[in-house]
Image 1 (tube, helix red, strand yellow):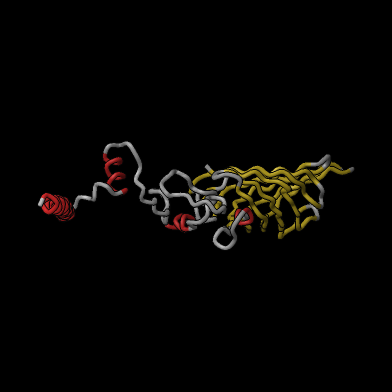
Image 2 (spheres, helix red, strand yellow; image 1 turned 60 degrees about the vertical axis):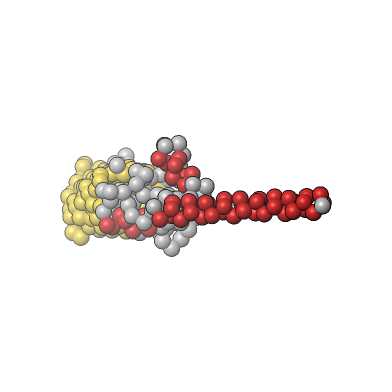
Length: 257
């Protein structure tokens, strides 16, 4: 008789435990339904913890930051194309970078720049210093004043001009370090002054100048690049027997502000 009662008591205890478990599940389901209907996140989820951390200023959301597809607020539509390379950073590498962080890659700057080139003038042979202050439009196009200065023991060459240049960005088609190269072409109009000394004294002449240039530049930072540039300075009416002056800037330093 005692065994029967004990068995019945054990079965009653098991039934009570099952009932309490069902009650807990029912309460949990009701709470989940209520919180879902009120738009609250499940408090045990990673999203909820991240949301609470953001609200308290104690953490960062675990949701991945969306990639950049546009430029900073003051960027032009033309500059926006440079920000579309989401799998490359400002110099053609594979690290993505976000818009709005203040970075504008070289070539997308809109404003004044400065350039200084060193090289030589061929036929007549002279040492060359080339300075210019172009205004960059942010599309690879720049326009501005330029001055070529050539000097030798008995020769002087000065050529002020207004020049237009276009540098093509390769990052859309070439990845890695080679993607930083920017082939360029340019043209300018101005004047050329030549002076030569000989036994008869000083001879000088001024003539109209048409400048055609080509080269390549390589950005090193967001605002600085090095380049090499070749110029064909055409003198349509000639000057002191010269109708073409070839110059080569072996190295040119370029800055964008």
